Length: 278
Image (cartoon, rainbow, N blue to C red):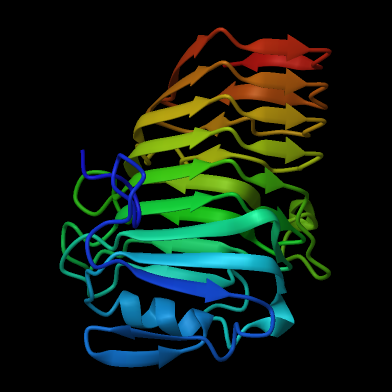
């Protein structure tokens, strides 16, 4: 009932939300005041947000922003990081594209909850209406430290387009096209809807192994077009997948392993090599 990210359930911004517009020309110089402190630059604003400010933050991307446009990255491998490091409450962050050409090129976002942060520091994220391509690691990665005590939770990813990633010098042979288009690990209350994945390689990972748990995940109205694998790969927990179009999958579509459980409902498999694996 509290919405995800900077918005209420009725589509209005939450009270006192800070709105920041970012373009390729302003990514290094854009300013935002959080908790009485002014931060400069896209990554620096997010860094300031995670230091304890609980004001809803809506970052609106206009046009294409590539890695050279950014002020800095907290992680050169993962791109822009959003950590629930010292926050004492929900982070309430929305990152959204404005118009039909908002693009993140050559980098991605990692949202994480660490074992040292308070219980509620990894809540309430939304990413929507952005095209992602050429990301070196994950386009979007969401990861808690533990699904029970330090989870990442209440995440909504919707109306995005994902193309393959690109890594010139991958640490592992299967990461030449990035490590994941949109991954979710050790968390709960996750919705991924109305996204279009085009020729992606390692697409959606839910969990990282048998010891991980992910709960209350819903994937619906997504379109996987010519995707190689992980549509999704479920490594633990439970997921509901419905009204999804699997279009000419090159390898596995729904791929369940370990303790994963899936309710697959009203999906369409069109010329897929393997429609289901458990």
